[in-house]
Every structure is written in C-alpha cells, then in structure tokens.
Length: 56
Image (cartoon, rainbow, N blue to C red; front, side, top):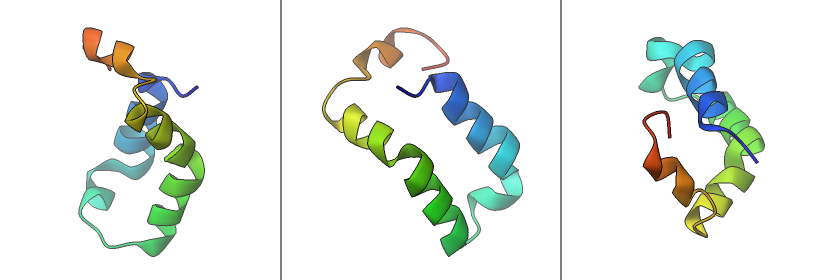
C-alpha cells in the first residue's frame, strides 16, 4: 500500500512545479506504473483513512 507521504514526495519533489502542467507522456507512464494500483484501491475505498489526517 502506498503512503500519502510517498505520493507527496513523488509529486512535490520528483516532479515539482515545472512538471505539473507539462504535457509529458513519459511522466504519465511513470505515474501509471507507480500509482495505478493505488489509484484503483482508492476508487474502491481502501484509502478512506487518508481523509482523516492532513497529509492524506
């Protein structure tokens, strides 16, 4: 299971502001590879606990 800190570290530190609005198929592929299972789990409600604390 992915932690909120892992998602934030990826998005804030690895991708950073320069990558947030850039069209980049390679970045899209990295995101899918790394977080597709977590995204599906979140859709199924398995990450509902994240809603109870700030980093989530």
